[in-house]
Amino acid sequence: MKKLILAAVLPLLATPAFAADSGMKAGLWEIKTLKQVMDGQDMKAQMAAAQAQMQQQMASMPPEQRKQMEAMLGRQGMSMGSGGATRICISEEMAKRDTPVVDPEGRCQPTKMSRSGNTMRYEVDCTVDGRRSQGRGESTFSGNTIHSRMDMTTTDARGRHTMQMESQMNYLGRDCQGLAPMGAGRR
Image 1: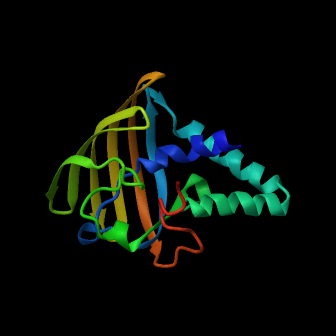
Image 2: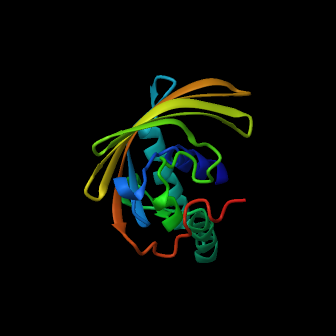
């Protein structure tokens, strides 16, 4: 079950968002993956199937076990929304940063950034836990919506992998509905 959760949620952690003066607000956001291609293979359908399977498994769990699983996700700052979307809680601190949120724990920060109107472009190059990630991204703010695209190459002990991702984040409001802010429950 943990592998299934990681497979369904990890790509969303790379979803970039940007700071308060550009559109990021503290509170509950829903992320929808519009495109996810890994090593040339469209992964969106597989990820949606993994999320649907996880939701189905959670629905069939005894109530106590389901509550534990939901609490674990909540402590990590996320929950499953409808239609394969994921909900995350953004803290005041994260919303005020003037950088894209590439890694909720702050271990991977952009190396270059530029802004033009309501669009931010950035580059990342960092190594975390033996995995090097290099890439470029772009996020565009429009009202309570942030549209993001990212191209990333990751190199680790298993080899080199490329990923292209496109997502849309929609602001749902200040109330995080019991979710801890992203990164707050991680150790």
